[in-house]
Amino acid sequence: MTKHFTTALVLTAVIATLPFVPTQAADGYRVYVSNERAGTITVIDGASNKVVKTIKTGFRARGIDVRDGRVYVALSDDRRNAQGKGDAIVALDPATGRTLARHEVGTDPERFVLSHDGTRLFAANEDAGTATVIDLASHKTLATLIVGVEPEGVAISPEGRWVYVTAETSNTVSVIDTKRLKVVSSFLVDPRPRSAAFSPDGRYAWVTSEIGGSVTVVDARKHTPIKTIPMPPPSKPVGIVLSPDGKWVYVANGYGNNVGIIDAHTRAIVATVPVGKRPWGIAVTPDGSRVYTANGLSNDVSVVDTRTRKTIATIPAGEGTWGVAIGE
Amino acid sequence: MDAQRRLLLGWLAATALGVLPRRMHASQTGVIRIAAPDAGAEEIQRGLDAGIREASQTAGLLGRRIERVAAGRSAFAEIAIDDGVWIQAAGGCRFRISAPPAARAAALARWLASTGRRRCRITLSPAADVRQAFASAGVTLVDTGSADAMLIDPANRGDAGGGMLRVALAPVPGQGDAAWVAGWHASLVKFGASDLNERFTRAFHAPMTPQAWCAWVAVKAVVEAALRGAAADDACRALAALRFDGHKGVPLGFREEDLVQPLCLVVREHGREQADFVDGDRG
Image (cartoon, rainbow over all chains, first blue to last red; front, side, top):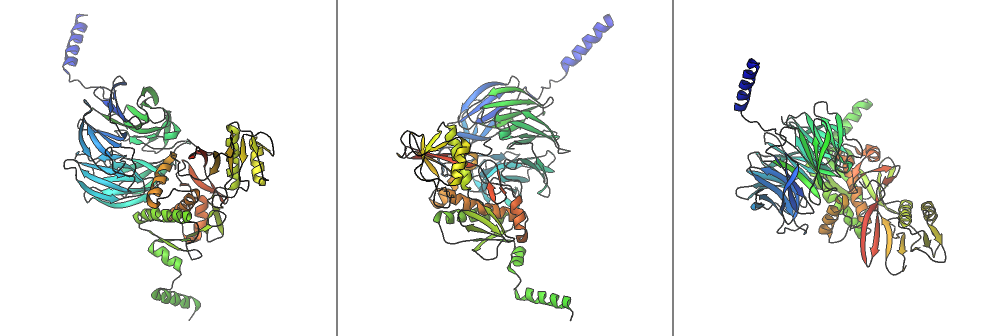
């Protein structure tokens, strides 16, 4: 008995001295959600799945990302095809909601991606049919590149060399060489490509096609489509993200009202998880245990447990919930 | 000299003189030729121009080039204007882009029924397809007496045919409020329609009409079939199998010779026209 008590005491002491490792799914992470019609950013605590803050932007809020303690969001005003005071990608202080930086990238900015070192921003200009590269420090436009008609999705490869820009009307994906700042290749995918995402090892890219109802697997070294995966009707694939270990592909199936899960190795669809209405944006936690979707027609966020493949929470957000990003 | 050798020498000579058949030359240089009439309704010409402009941007990215040639010239396919906008290709196939009159009549009749308008007054004898459509939807056509709507144009011609089946709406038929079904309208918003309408208006300072949309999407379909690898002698098969996007929220494709597509209901109230998609998958 004494021996057991001593052992327990020692074990307790040892465990107490171990460094604290947070459970990555929740503690320390916040979920940032853009709301297109409300013009707000909903901030959700990852541990409790409770809304902790709503940041007013005053403009139509769509593309969203979090980097180095800043929330980047694409804003636009009511004046289409004209550069207005609301048309910009802004960096916000998530604590105060204050605008820290403002980058003009053309009219009605929608989706964008930041370079891994946080120095450049690549944005799709839907109206102009171009992609713009901005130097974040100087705010200068480094390049304006012709891509397909109605460009939308923007994704950057893990090593940062390639940026893929999808174009809804052209059904193309254009490949930007980030060293040369040139479009070096373009290829066709199924109708109305929306988003792209790279595998963590950079070997493959995955592209959603909303009207095609499919996901295209691309050899990201040759920039060549190698397989098209039809999603189960009535899926309309829009947002896409890969698990951090690269094993699973999560697809926000838009009007299909579900998240499709694809085994990245076998490329087979292994599950469809019902979520809110018209999931658009999608993000995964750094440990891969949770997937969040921004549901545009039900104005909420679904939380999917990736182990059980079930929706475990629905969190009200703002009107026209659009994009979702996870950060500190 | 045997026949094979003569054929080879002839082919070499023709190559040197640049007199090979145009189609082979076009294929080698990556040119996609589209034949289209250069006269006709201004709105159709605008739609063709818009289609060619956007297709050229796409083709340029893929190392190809679009060339518009006069109707009747050798081409991957021809856009023809008849009782609507058609695509026709070598091999004798024809695909109608304009919404078939019967489909538009049926959609209009179903909408009347869904809004409780079950009696529709007529002043002239409607076409047989109109009578059939209204009967199927449970809307009674009456010559006299009270009615919920009044059929204005019973001819029911196509989008590009100059006539549009439409109904004047009760309670005061004839006072300007009306409804009709079309293939497109400049007030459409969903499924990227507003983006297309914006682009078109910015380029031409004119709204995208149903006829303009038909011409635009005809070019889009032809170029897409070519860009996806079809040769001119395979255009009919490629077009028949094509599934493409026309900013209507669902994949468009051909069933026999007609484009299967969602239509839109246009309601004009107090002088303002507002359209939304009907039929097909609305998501």
